[in-house]
Amino acid sequence: MNKQIFEYHPIIGYRFIPNIQTRVQHESGGYLIRTNSLGFRSELEFTPARAKNYKRILLFGDSYTAADGVSNKKRYSDVLMQLLPETEIYNFGMPGTGTDQQYLIYKEYAKNIEHDLLMVVVLVENIRRITAKYRVYLNDKNERVVLQKPYFALEDGILVLKNTPVDPNPIKAKDLQASEKKKVDTGGRFPTIRRFINKAGLKDLAQGLTKYQPLPEYKKNKGEWLLMKSILLKWYAELDKPLLLIPLPLHQYVEDQSDYTDIEKRFEEFNNIQNLFLFNPISCLRKFSIADRRKFRFEFDEHPSPFGHETYAKIFKPKIEDLLRLR
Image (cartoon, rainbow, N blue to C red; front, side, top):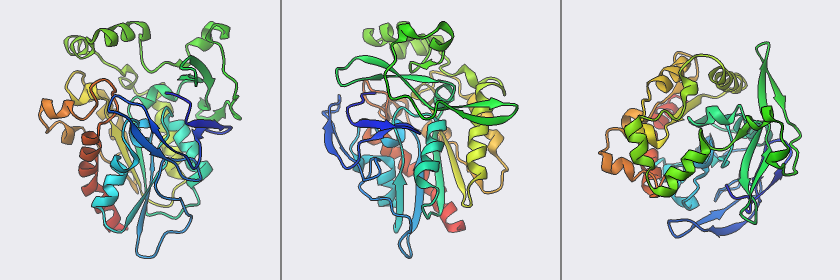
């Protein structure tokens, strides 16, 4: 992730620079970003009180929700607003963040905003990000730098926030102790091998042949999953409105390159909790042909394409309508 459109934030780590409008280079030809005064990608200003006769949804997620690669109006949040009359969606998505940082965004910016539904879209890769103390970014010179991030640790079953305020200064990877280097989120396992395969254009073939499992952390109900579950339950416990929890699968699972069973099993642990509604979109996404599923993402960038965002919006719409009617 490139930092040119972001600024330091002591609690979250960073946010979009407020009140900017710019075009970001991309394989699609580029996309438009507009941010509001709070530093989130949005055509709307986020106001505490909602308009009479309007419903409002607060939406949280990472770059799949903030929508790297597409302009604001083509994101699934904005498409949903077109599909759901008299409904506002405040998109608090922030690229590169984990569920831990997204919870902190809620605490910092959204807890006093009137709403009818809170929606947390968890890209399943976030299970790795929440255990990281650092993350690799690109600076304005296109150089890879390591920056600190906030994170939670489970101490005697209690979540304890660490690395706050976040250190704004870049860290040289060579200066980190060996134990700390393991806490740097590089975006996946085996980064050197992954970069070689990606550069050679062999990624899909290699993963399909090996049935590559990107996220073995979901296999057992311990460690990283317990941390993820604890963060989400802490967030839920602080709400007085319904929570819609949506695990968003990586393309390997959507395109049948990897087994999704363990992830489905883990998130099913959130079933039968009052006022918490789990919606797993994997079966809906797999109803499309393989050719169409491949179109959910860009040719090289793994983020959702405009077609992917449109599909998410249409799949999420019936569940959201049901929950808003309940309110």
